[in-house]
Image (tube, rainbow over all chains, first blue to last red; front, side):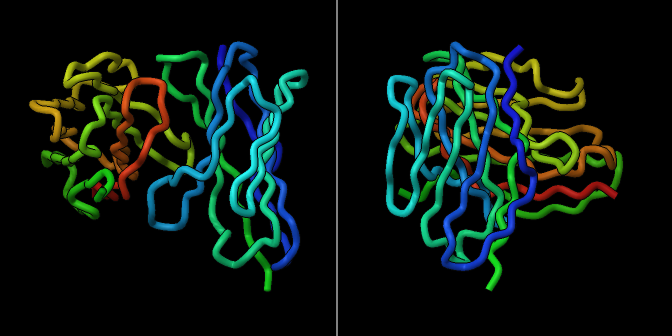
Length: 112
Length: 113
């Protein structure tokens, strides 16, 4: 069945370093992926998305990489800041019109 | 845009009481979702609506849970009677159409004692 999993449930990085959060997915038919950030006491917030016809997409300080060969998604955060501390979820969509399946999340802690 | 608006933000209730959670989706969005988030199970989709019509309620835990969407700008999730194991954060979310980017509200934090 469809599933989205994360390799690392927690990640601690030094302020200013780059962060890499990983996500594995099992459905090769998935065509759209989103990364969400959830801060304590708040709802998940859209960060960046990528479609299956791309392998890289960049935003402000964030980059998402998609490797369809190994069904792997990653979120890179450049120059990690204290405000980046949150839980990050990946979500996949099996195909257009279907709903998203969310991973369990990775907690990112930024150390001073 | 104000985003998805949920109320109440926090609710503490006694076991057996009825709980009603409310949601106003983003204007123009025609898909609405109710999710539940717990430490043990993460984010679970309970039910979603397209154009005010319930499409998939297979995630609703049991008959104690019900959801309605009487119009495009309002939805409720009701738990009756509530039980301690219902304690969780309940998120409402909306999207322009099913399969498009989902935008979440800030959640309703429910504690049943």
